[in-house]
Length: 337
Image 1 (cartoon, rainbow, N blue to C red):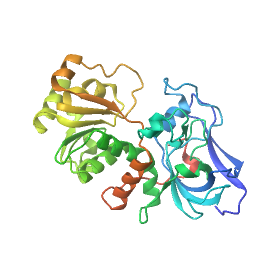
Image 2: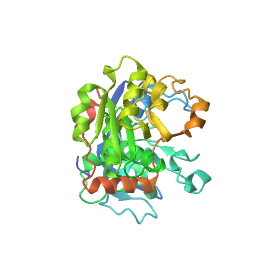
Image 3: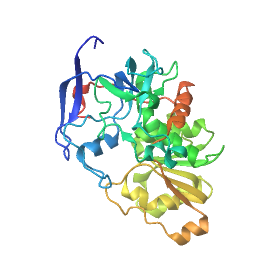
Image 4: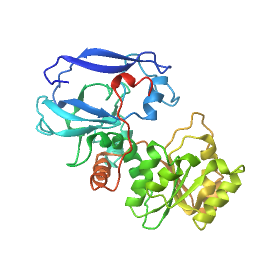
């Protein structure tokens, strides 16, 4: 669409609580002080977008509002600057993340926990997101896109990619570690395999058998088809055998309650379980404190990374070590997606 147009096509959540989407023609917003206007080129679609649309996260403080523009994995070009903005410059390629802004001064922000800032603005949840052609963004919080990186491929990295990369880095992955990836053939999982390999780990991928060849093509060292195990203990025994006693890191890219119920049995001594997928029902993960103490197990969770982690994640992808598998679709197809 020409930059001289006055129309901004945007997909809104038409009836929160349901997946109903409407595409409207709205005015193009004007950037205020400290803001820029981004002409969006691509946006990824995340399961969290679906959860926002359907009010599928019961832990959120307020429900999604009708007319909300969703999306939080956007790549675009800066086309206008508000007062006081020097960078990014007009013409810069930038990324919009799960967190659209943060105060950068509170204790959470100072520890790198910008996505948990009390003043954070979340893209697509009470802040207009990336399911539109033109988006206002706080200039200081945009992420520059490295030269040579496929812009369409970069979009899912703004959430899915940085989330799995951050999970690996914060769980202190080491060269040669076994990293178990559940849901390995999915959006998060296929990126987790590649980032784990880029960081020197060995990968055990778990998914449906139809994903085996795909996961192996991404670099997975071993693959287990969970449908081939009638008993959960048999799958756990297979994991322990392959990894010589258990994985060092378990990335829960699947939201399956069954996966969470068995995840700790897949870890070895001082294993680290990282919760990423959000089960629809709480109570799936019920660890034995005694077993955790005996094996010195760590459980953590990641919602997304901070600005520094995004840049590291993008640089690895720009080097060619990580390639997003994606399909291009039109904005009008969002409801079906």
